[in-house]
Structures are given as structure tokens and as C-alpha cells.
Image 1: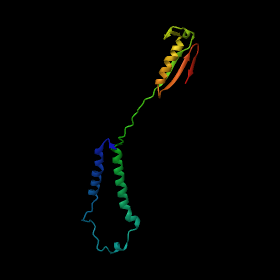
Image 2 (image 1 turned 90 degrees about the horizontal axis):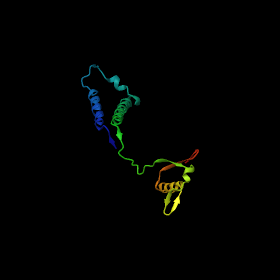
Image 3 (image 1 turned 30 degrees about the vertical axis):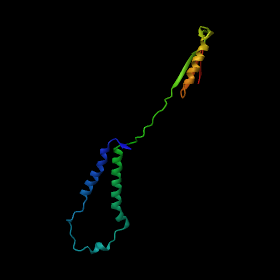
Image 4 (image 1 turned 90 degrees about the vertical axis):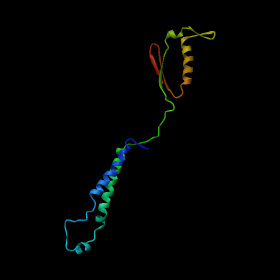
Length: 145
């Protein structure tokens, strides 16, 4: 897998580092109290203990996943087309003029329609994987698939 914009993957590191720097514990407190005894007796609940780490984890996950999506992951597997098929429509005249015997094959005379059949049979044998259709027309058109 590759990324279209791999430099974006460095953004969450900088962003999360700036958050950690900004939220670091400050040793000088603004409020001083005379005794911490009342606070020691109050035990934090499980919900209070887990809230800040959970929110931090969810936010960090969000930033990382958004940056991965922005980097545009791409697959490197190339699908190749070994054979491209074609859609072909053959149009043949079957009117009375196709009965004219003006083609010669060897020593015998062929009608135009017989010559077309010979040529088309060779053409169709070579068309592996192609889809063929036939329109025969004379006084009317007839569609064959």
C-alpha cells in the first residue's frame, strides 16, 4: 500500500506533541490550601479515573485516522485486462441482388450471399470472446443476436 500524500502522516505527531506540551502539568499552582485531608478521604470513582485517559485515547485515535485518510492510501495491485472483447454488429444484404453469381471460388461460380457466408464464417471463427450480432435486410430488416 502506498500513500498519495505521505508527508501528511507527520501531522498527527506534531499536533499531538503540541497538545502534550500545552497540557503539561505546571508545578506552580495558583490556589494554595491549608490542608488536603478532606480531598484524601474522597476517592475518585471508576468513571472519573477512566474519563480523561479514555477521552485522550479517542481524540488521538481520531487525529491519527483522519490523517491516514487525508494521506489517501492507495493499493499498488494493478488489474490487467488480458483480452478486450468487442461488441460487433454484422449487416448483410439478403435482397434479390445477392443471388447474382459473380464471385469465383476455385472453378465454381458463387452467389454474392454464398461468398458472404464463407467470409463471415472465417471471420466469426477468429472472434473468440467477442459478442456478435447480425442484421439481415432485404425489403425489411431482421435482427439476430
